[in-house]
Figure 1 (spheres, helix red, strand yellow):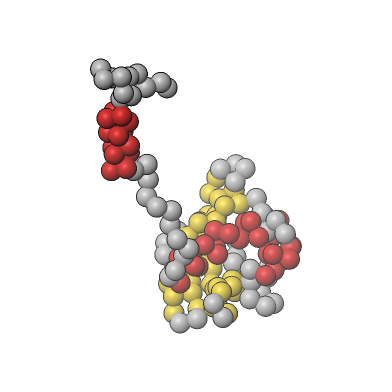
Figure 2 (tube, rainbow, N blue to C red; figure 1 turned 90 degrees about the horizontal axis):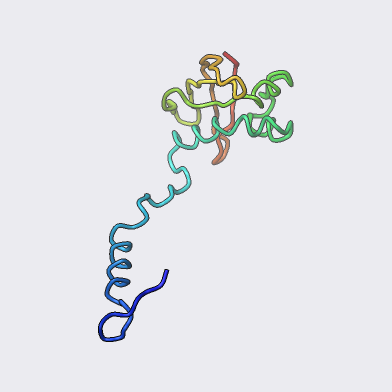
Length: 134
C-alpha cells in the first residue's frame, strides 16, 4: 500500500491517523482471552473435558483419578477416542462434586450417551472418583 502525497506534498497523514484511531476505538472485534478457570464449577468442567487427552497416556489417565479409582484399561482406550462435555454445570458439595457428562465418539461424531461422574477435591485439584461410560 502506498500513500499518495496530498496537495502540499505531504503524505496523507490524516487518512492514516483516521485509520489508526478507528482501529483503536473498535479494536480487533474480540474479547480478551479468558483467564484460567477460577470457580470449582469451571475447574471441574475443564478436568472433565480434558479426560480424553489424559486417556492417551496411561500415567496421565491414572493421575486424573483419585488414588485407586482409575477404571480398567478398556475404558481408557474408549475414552481416548471420545469427547466429553459437561451436560450441565457441576454440583459442588464441599470437597465433592457431581456432574452429568455427554460422551461423544469423536470418529463417528455420534453421542454415546450421558453418565453421572463424581469427583473429589484433593488439595487444589479435582480428581475423578467415578467416570462410568454411558
